Image (cartoon, rainbow, N blue to C red; front, side, top):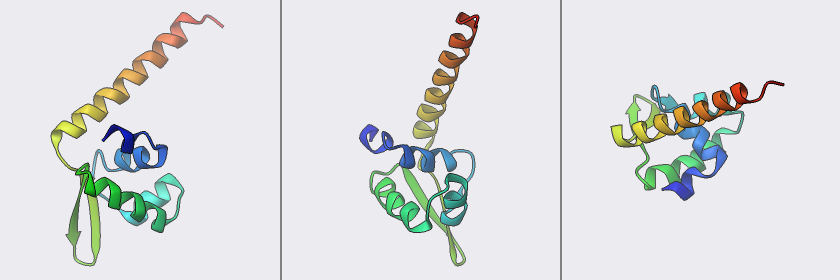
Length: 93
C-alpha cells in the first residue's frame, strides 16, 4: 500500500478523491496529466482497495475506500504541514 502511494502521481490521485468523489476527467485536469494515465493509476489503486468506483449513469466517480485510509492520509498531510510550519518559525531568514 505504501509503495503504491509513494508514486507522486498516485498520491495526487488519492488526495484528489479525499474530500469528494472525482471523475477521471476532473482528476486529469486537476493534476495536469492525461485521462488515460489517470485510468492506468486508478486500476492499480482500485486493485489495492485504496479507492472505490461508483458508477453514476455513464460516468464513474472514484473515492477513498474507507475511513481508515482517509484518516491515515489526513494525519500524514497534517503532520507534513506542521513540520513545514515549524521550519518557517525556526528559521528567522
